[in-house]
Image (cartoon, rainbow, N blue to C red; front, top):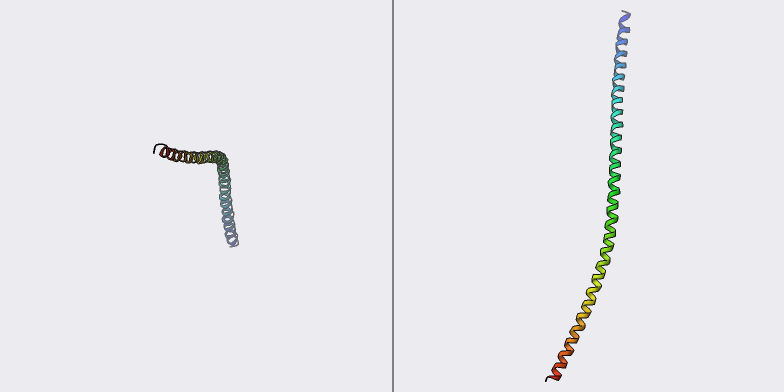
Amino acid sequence: MLLSPFLAFFNKFTEYITSIYRTLKTLNINEDRIIELLSESLQKQDEMVSELSGIRKEVEYIKEQQAKSNLEVKEVRLSVMKLAEYIERLLKFEEKIEALEKAVFK
């Protein structure tokens, strides 16, 4: 009878130690998995940084192209304005020529 409480305690203690062992084993697996996931996330972060660097380069290129395009548009706009002024002068010359023709050939 004295052994009965001891065996009960020993069984409970064995179950407790087994439970701790299983938990630690699971925890170790989880730690390994956590390390694996962190490693994967670092790789993904490196990929994202690389992609971001590429995107920044593309944005800089686009900004340069936009600046060039803006200058070209400005030049075209000025050319169109000069052409409009030239056409106005031609029309005025045409009006003057018509007036001279009317006066001369009347």
